[in-house]
Image 1 (cartoon, rainbow, N blue to C red):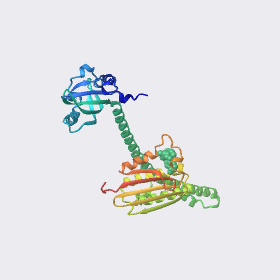
Image 2 (image 1 turned 90 degrees about the vertical axis):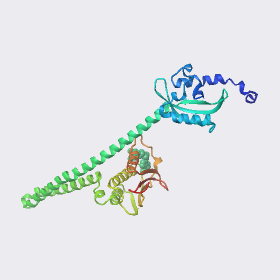
Image 3 (image 1 turned 45 degrees about the vertical axis):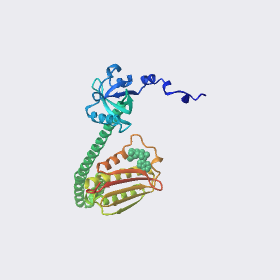
Image 4 (image 1 turned 135 degrees about the horizontal axis):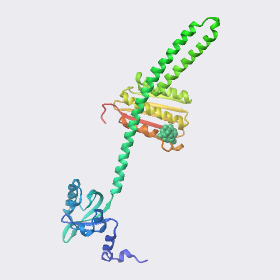
Length: 355
Ligand SMILES: Nc1ncnc2c1ncn2[C@@H]1O[C@H](COP(=O)(O)OP(=O)(O)O)[C@@H](O)[C@H]1O
Ligand SMILES: [Mg+2]
């Protein structure tokens, strides 16, 4: 096999054909004007090549790009830098913007310093990236809105349930107690027994309403603070799911603002729901450490681990948790716990702490 590359001289390569067919734009700038452009480069600006050649560089870019384009031009033509790779925005003949990825180097053309460059039209990918960014922002806003609305709704429902329904049940129980007190004659035995059954039923109902209301908006959180509310939540979780629980706290407790505390509580609730649903754990450990600068919470289970279960399509729990963390300026990490299982680690900067 002949060594083609060593036998060919540079002049043997038909560069003109290559350049003119190139799918990348190719251009030469001399004295700030395009003295050469291939069809591809001219088409990026919406021109036929003959209409494009001779145009001033500054007339082909957006006004906010002119300074950078000229600075880069002078750097290379002046010899300070040999070549530069950068992005800029061109203006097409119809006024539309074209995003360009350019790489151009200093050359000598007709005895003078000039630029020879290659360009790619990256408008589609820039627009896709922008659109993706916009959608992400919208999704965030939606998540924030949903979280806030849910919180308000829950608090409202919890209050209504507790105050209104709880109040009505208490009144009913009170009246039933009166009936029970007034039906002590032997011939009233049946009514007396019914009244007592109803009193027991009312008591259970009141307890159920309290439990539901507390689930919706834990009173402990408002009355006793985050640490107590979390301890209580863990205890209930352990009893309900027959899982051993452990809570370790260090540092001053309850220094987070009420709104942040609610978000933290909800994150733990959601994480516990995940443990119940997915982990098949025997032990759950909650650690809270607070310093002057950071609140750190770690909830770990000894279950099957994140990757043992199929990530449910359309699952939003972890996303919602991360979003809540972000809303209070914190960060959430979900990963493998040392020794297997899953851990959720939340860090939130303390109010007033330097970032
Ligand atoms: N503690 C955990 N143990 C094992 N797998 C988990 C745990 N938490 C979450 N996962 C996995 O992560 C996925 C996403 O969780 P999430 O977003 O809360 O959705 P969902 O709970 O609705 O399925 C779950 O479907 C599950 O596969
Ligand atoms: Mg979940």
